[in-house]
Amino acid sequence: NYASGTNGNVNNNLYLQPRWGYEVRLTAPGTTGGESTYQDLRAKNLYANILQSNSATGDNHVYIRPINSGELRIMNPNNTSYRNVRANNIYLANIVKPDEGDLYVGTSGKVRIMGRGLWEDSNYRPIVSSAFENPSLETFKTNIRRYEDSALSIIDNAEIYNYELKSDVKEGKNEIHTGLIIGDDYQTPDCIKSDDGSAIDLYAMSSLGWKAIQELSDKVKDLRSEIDLLREELNNE
Image 1 (cartoon, helix red, strand yellow):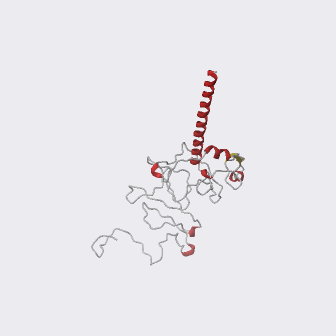
Image 2 (tube, rainbow, N blue to C red):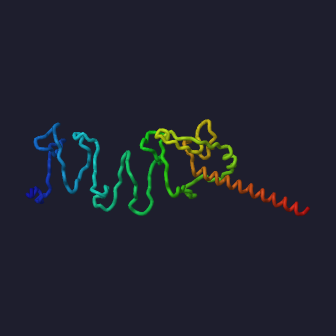
Image 3 (tube, one colour):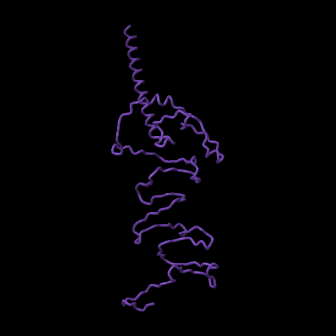
């Protein structure tokens, strides 16, 4: 309707105005109500507050289908920057950051890499990477004090086991793993356990090994000094 409105302005928009609380429905000719056969809608841009699957079609999923190698992009109205996506579970083949720089994963808890059965506590999956870096700047830490205990004695009293993972056995895998076991009947040092006591802190474990190497280095130096003294005594005889 190109007629002028009450304010004198021409309105070029098309309005579909059902009564309050009802919907605009595109159906095949002669089908309405519970017998409706819905038809497709094709447009360039769609502006809406909510996008929801039509349960009347028998499908609970919402499909967004870019053509060929096209992408699904969540943008601001001017297409100048990306917007956030919030969901409960997201199933992806890859996560790729398009621009240079770091990829951040923000969580109030821990990042856990699990198999598809997320509800199974033992269903953890490996991580393959070129490096793992633990932030260790002084500015990140407080109550800093030197570690004075003997790392060698802690390592000597720990017990190493071979074991199989329940998740591997369930999948028919017969892989033998080697490592520490956390439990009442196993000798695993508390100083290398995670804060909740359910996992091994690899950074703490490697640091303890580093400390043990330092202690062994001191022992080697002492032995060398003793050997040098013995050699001097033998040469003086």
